[in-house]
Image (tube, rainbow, N blue to C red; front, side, top):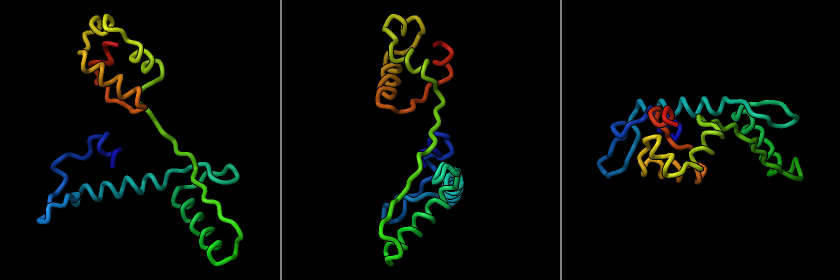
Length: 139
């Protein structure tokens, strides 16, 4: 869901308020979300024996091992979650340059004080901030 929001594929108008004031996804957005989840489940990750498997297969294998443990076919159970691949659209040099930017440099680049503050805050919290093309060109 967050990925779809970041990609601006979901808008406020895609949510529906029901009669009992519950928020629900519209049908089209729900389909889009399911497609995204399926896509993520089909991504391949390093699992056991240095082989790559989809999350769907990894989940099935973990559940099978759990079932075998429950019915005493196995004496121990290890739930294995592979490390996920995370991608960023910024780079370390740019991040460092922004974090070390002085007020004079900010003025020289013509960047608003509050804009720089928000970008620095998000970077220091480990978030991937939205840096507009206009700002990137200045830096």
